[in-house]
Amino acid sequence: MKITSVHAVYPKYKHTVPSWRTHLWQIVVKIETDTGQVGWGYGGGGKAAVEVVNGHFAEILTGKSFDSVSDIGDIWDFLYAESIPYGRKGVAIMALSGVDLALYDALGKAENKPVALLLSDSPKQHMRCYATGPDTDYYADLGFTAQKFPFRWTGEESIDEGVRLAEKARSVFGPKAEVMFDVYMSWDSVITLRMHEALKHVGIHWYEDILTPDDLMELGELRPKIQPVNMAGGEHEFSTHGFADIARAGAYDIWQPDITWCGGITAGSRIVDMAKVAGVEVVPHRGAETWGLHLVAASDCEDFAEILPGVRGGAKDDLWIGEPEVIDGHIDISDKPGFGVKPNEDLL
Ligand SMILES: [Mg+2]
Image 1 (spheres, rainbow, N blue to C red):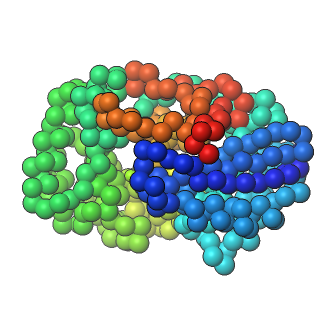
Image 2 (image 1 turned 180 degrees about the vertical axis):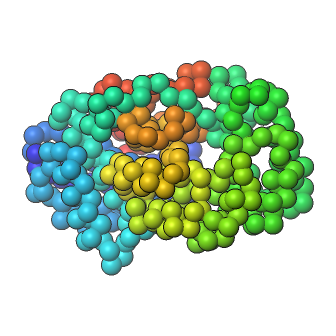
């Protein structure tokens, strides 16, 4: 089938700060084909990425044909090469992610298969989720047995606070629970070793995003010093080129590409293949959202999918209609074609 139109929009979010650079800054990409398929994709990069899609990719994609996973891979390589002068990482690859996912959605619809079945004959159906957020009691009530705390260093008091949060999660969820900390690049090596010492008795599954992605060598040196706790990261890295640097530095035990940022399913699948060679695990960032979930289901990613349930009583924008729900801390992949979702038109 031939691409007849490509268009990106930045949704009218109500429950996030109205800026293109808010935390998730997600864009919606729509691709139409001459066979009547409409593919929806989800990318990052805010209004700048909308410009990349509408101002550049749309022009060079219109008229191109794709009928297989390998055709989508060729289109990915073409867009990557065309955007090298201003791209390679960041906004351009976040835009490319949205296009790649829209192509996968259209191909799934054309073949009447969920994306996971385009990638594997026997995808996982039922996957364990972990909750990212602060509300331990709420997540326990929802049936989760794993929690990741967003936790930034604010000074000496952070040590006691971290211990308090971790001990509470351990006592609420029990001995088989997984407890993780995402420190969003707010620690350094000295703080990491101090926190590691203070939290040893609780048993932490991973520390995430300890340093920035520019400090891969230092992360690689720190990693063996906190074993058996895992070092996790990669949500700010892009494509196989970026993950090759992570592999060379031995920076992480657990790679966390964001499928709507790192280059879509095409880049995500290639990154999972690289991880196997490097002997590390892959737990995609926001892996329980439908875009990452199909890769988790259809690849060697860990059976561990991230969801952000918010806090009890909190309001959220429901941008995608048809996303599978987390029940008892687990999620099932949808059997609808493509990614199985359509956007809430009120937000477009
Ligand atoms: Mg994170």
